[in-house]
Image (cartoon, rainbow, N blue to C red; front, side):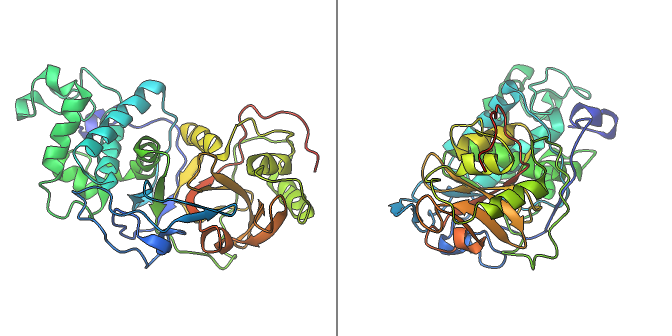
Amino acid sequence: MKTARNVGIAIFAAFLAVTGISVLVVAGATGAANANTCNGSLQPVSDGQSGAGAGGDPVKFDGSTQSSNGQVIVPLNPQGPQTHATWNDAQVRNASTITNVARTRGLAPRAAVIAVATAMQESSLNNLDHGNLDSVGLFQQRPSQGWGTVAQLTDPVYASGKFYDSLVKVHGWQTMPLTQAAQSVQQSGLPDAYAYWEQAAGALVAKTWGLHAVTSVSTGCDSDGSSDPAAHFTTKNPRTAAQAIAAARKASGTTGWYRRCDNFVAQAYGWGSSGSETANVHWNRLVDAGLAHPGDNNPPAGALLFYDTGESAGHVALYLGDDMVASNDIRGNGTIGIVHRRDLTDGTWRLRYRGWAEPSFPDAGGTSAI
């Protein structure tokens, strides 16, 4: 396991620190209350060891009702500063393996979040053939401590299985803080370091779990508008966040935007096209780039808010601040409307909030018409 001497193996040089609210969330979608992942309304529907629990209420979007049978909540409970990084293909594959082992064992997504966060800290999701003393593999497990042989521990499937074998023996692992659960298995010299990776782990677990997986963190339904954090976007666009918000407000009431949500937010920022085929594709690209904040319900003005619609395209809206968003189709097909965030999650559509991201538009081009 990792000690203070080799912490450098897992900590990336650059990171963006964000603060999470310490509220326990239990695995499993729980119906209408989960549409906005509000604080105080989540109820346990699973013991954490028998799958993800029941799906939520059907999603109503664009006049059609979508089944939610495949939707699950990937529960997060970030405590303290969070570390974000960009993962290469090999690292994402390793996170997917860890997640899929949890799925095949019938464990809840919470188990996968704990395991992926642990591997992020221990090995940066690299299947290492070395480490402190005789530690090897994704979890830096030690042959001399009875975890298995070097060959076994450098097999990601075997190593993940051994981690879960130990995790499920920890009483209350489903609801205890992630770093406490991970430390109960790992016995690390840096017991608090696992906490840094919870949001990053949740993002990769949600990607692997399936199209309708949603990351959820309980940070309150709404703010009063005065607590919106200041925007510190690192991305560059033809327009600033303030200019994009002004353009979106000016476009209110215009038509011709049916199912063009990603194009609308791109045009608000001055681009002619978004560079992504759908909002879901856009979200996944921003997750991969470390620019997304899954489950974080306190975006800064100018952020892009992403939603699961029960369809492959997804939805994105522009956050204007003060709990208001600019969205296409919400005031009628093709029409831009300015509405409260609740209208997306608690209104007719009942969309499931995925999180917010910086206004980055990979491969965007052209010039806005608005």
